[in-house]
Image (cartoon, rainbow, N blue to C red; front, side, top):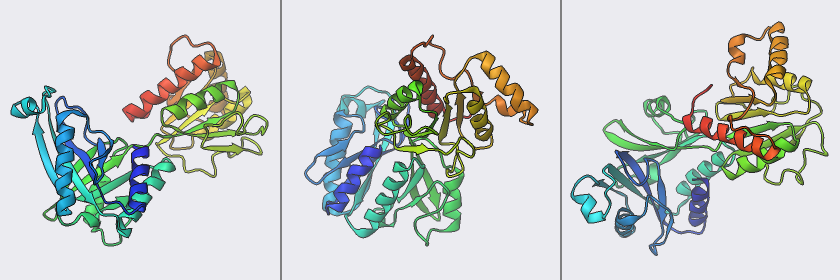
Length: 345
């Protein structure tokens, strides 16, 4: 999704109008879930997909009308009856498409650049698009702190959107003051903090970057925490020490903390700090014996057992991993599961 938004911003910067097709709602079995998006250019070319087949082909045809009329439209498909025969799809579900005509003007460039910037930083963000045919340029975004990009957004509408905000790439139809709005919740890959930069961290960084995590590597050793060892990392932070290692960061539920330092004492120091954050995931490498020793020391310092129950230790999925590469796979597998379920342990 991030790549699609980047390409959308490029098109708008180049002065190209476009149509953004969104699966605004679905039920049953459909090619794509609600939230799936596709860009249609004036020449009929597409970026992304809403599932292929005749539904996508019909969406491209509808987009052509949007360009001609300079406004959006909605189209529903029932893949349980005649539509299934017409579209040669027997998924057995229902879906609705919302096609937004997006003019290449300053207002839309600002909105989507804000969206792109937030996703690049790993922040969740919500795009609000009025469904009225003639109000497309009134769209706005709401950032991860619940703030709207426009000053004229009614407080009641803002409250309604924030009440149902989600961390998944889903869509919700909202009714306010007799108007309908499509709220698109853009999933974030997640900010993965690797505290430690040894062999396991290097393999984990590579695997995590491939599946969309934004990787931040932290260590107090510049000969380990560097661009040569971590070419995929979005950020590399060389610390004076592990004390207050998170003080410069806003650690929220979209952050994943993986503690893989070079020693028990450093692990314990970092874990103590991690438990004071709002991280959605905290994992620490090590054996059960190591875990017991660290937990016992933290409990003596006043840490509650309930806090320690949220920690994934030993870290990773139980796949009999042995090598750094295998351990990385087990860790990233657990991170993917955590991100997909969207729940705290």
